[in-house]
Image (tube, rainbow, N blue to C red; front, top):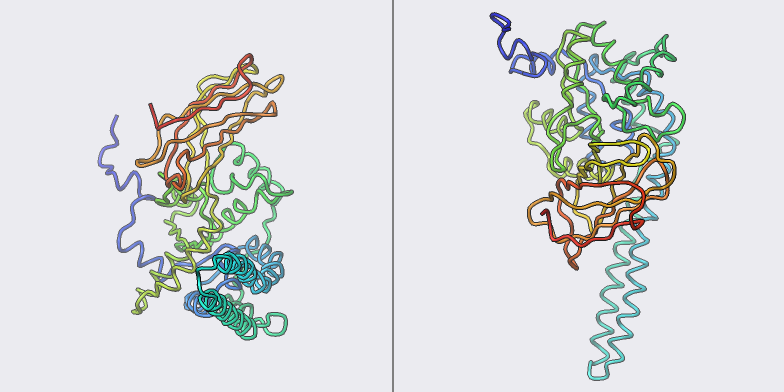
Length: 411
């Protein structure tokens, strides 16, 4: 039966955004960010830090962060500052390794008596000179780096921009943590991929999300959420590429607040802000943000589809997505219900990205509750490309104990 007079845009109004929706959010809405967006300000170089801070400051009076975000920022601020300081020493380590390798290479060249000594000496001198120049540059950058213990400009400027825009701890915190547990088990976004975090850490994304929705409803204004998250419990993904925010989040936000929500990655937000304020987007700045985002993103994500299962057999498929080229990867599946003892596991490749090399597959387990499928490139020097790898698996008793097979691609 049809809904008379109800159009596609009416029925899915939380999904469709028009020009007016964007303008209302950017001109009158409330901007909120997750903790890592702020913490990353300590990680970026000066130009990137300034660009993002200035963008946040432009929302003064409309910038708000949840209590959860503020707590995570305070908890991790000192750790991030220390890690950033250590980066200067980490940057020198490859130079030390290079000079050690250089010494071995120069000795090998000198052993070839037909090669004039001055050629190897020239190589040695030029490379060591370049290494020292880079060391001096690293030391210079260290000297110019802000001393956040003495003068934390990031906190000072955020305080001014935020004014009193920090949420308070929810009165029903224990109830919300129980709800986060339920949603995690049912894989309802956001945050279900944080199940490995200690204590109630798994609930962090959900607690932030609920605060954002509550504030949006209370203020009766559109919300813009900027997040550094890249996982699939925030974003729809296909073939290793991010498409759009999870539709469940867009729907829930509209149902809870009556307003549409805009969700951006940090680089998307900054690019749009620069364009809206009449400036040209700085690709160097945006690329640094993307590099940090990519480094934070897990290279492998796994979805499991089970065809049949009990405590003696489990068969189905693993859809393993990789977000960057790799030599090999591992996908983990669950055995639910758990087996009585460790089963034997076999697996075969059904589909892979175009141009993928032949692969070697090994499936095994040493537990009663999960199993691993290892996929290796079988062609020397050729990486497995970004995309989706579909594998069929079977766990049962009485097989060989593990499966090793060479695949040239899907059958």
